Length: 494
Figure 1 (spheres, one colour):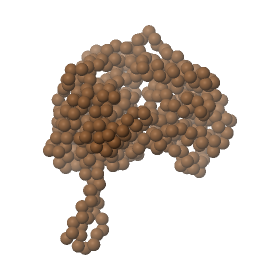
Figure 2: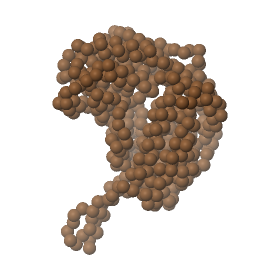
Figure 3: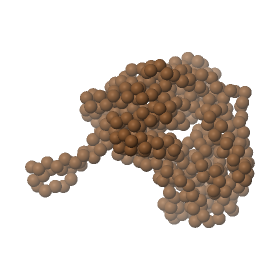
Figure 4: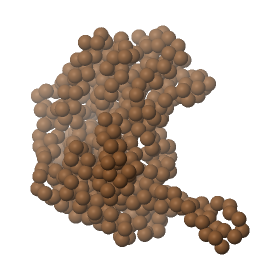
């Protein structure tokens, strides 16, 4: 295992580039910049090119030319797949550098960045690379004097806007299937985590991706994001982020070319523990892991723990004890279990929820305060509230931080009603030993993913996405290709 001193040494030697990546080359753009600051210690990492409409237009123009006249869409699917597999291999070679970049720019513990996030993004590019030539078109039955073909055609130029909490995983979930389908991509990473996306683009060029097939433009959402969303030469827009910003992208589509917009938005995921859970200790440990992993900065985080009243004290005490012993620390320390929040602005927002939670009558069981203030970084104690009411801000609004709300119920019908009492529908958890209960309750929950006796499990074979105001469409699996292809019917009269 790499030690803290070794990661610190690697960090000192790290060369970070903040230039845009357009048409296969680094571009400074108009010269506007912003400073990338590490939440680990508040220190500047590098200056980053701040893109606007001009840089987005240059990137979209490069992507359009690469799609209309370039080699990428015209390669055999197997050849595109080989490039994506080579990219996966190169990501493995650069794994430490990529993990370190992620950890520095958004505060994720280095062990999680290296072992979890990089594993996910490498597997994503390899999986779609291996899938690329396994898909077949259709030839429906027709009269003897006709031939019908149903083919999946790449949709064209894809705009992808991704957040900072899993900067490469979520980029990979969009970029890999889009490229496998034969599309070209303009990626706008979050201004809080642009550096890992830029490194991905440079590695993709090294893997053999032709210039213009993958472009990266940095910038803030209201400027660069809006320019991408309204650009008339973008055929599809794929976005992961907040529900509020998702609404903007729907407006951008209506105000431009009616591009399809695929949204993976916020969540307020319930985690239901029934008295017949097969292992209450495991259920409590998983509940704690789920809310504190990645500093709680996950749209699927099980931020509402719904516990049957007969076991509420036992489960809550176990979660509180785990929160009190969780090691919050330097993201570059392999022993750290919870790192830094992404920035001061985000910490302020999370602490506002903590304050109003207490004012609304919830009981603060542990945490709720800033910690490690001498580090210069942005750290928060793992936080648990109980006595939370269903109509409070704690129970209804997405906090996107390490803050758990515990609610109780007396029967299954009440549990389902509490779980569905939200505008979101991204994920849910359920703990029970009864197969019938597992089936019936999971079907009743309005969520795109339901985990039974586990949480955050899965692989690339299963789709991921939300219901209600958690969005539409699906990432991962074969179904993700539906977002980046058009069905074309050809009828040939013989």
